[in-house]
Image (cartoon, rainbow, N blue to C red):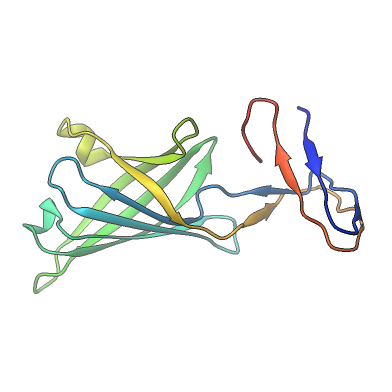
Length: 165
């Protein structure tokens, strides 16, 4: 796999294959095509390499139209983030639902597609999320060696297939 490296300013740098970008990390927004609820998903990288997911909606069908919060963790398998989440409804006492959710990157559209076991079982369409906020987060690749860098640099890494790493 070839990598194009573009550097700028007063830089002399050599970039090793020591880090890769985690494209799932950020704040994602979508609309549930089934009930019209405005959906948010916040995904962050944990120290152990897993990802944490927190989500909300203006309308959860499982919560009888009330608000709720989704919390869970997961791991990346290829271009899919596989998670086990808990939906906590805001009723009293709170209702809890355990859900398996998969988040797949759609590189063509730059979106994140959410499929849950409940939506699939009930033949409901997936929720499509658009990235609305992001920090550049990188995960160190196990066993890689870092090379020294001199000066300030800007690095853009592109794969021949138009993807990123």
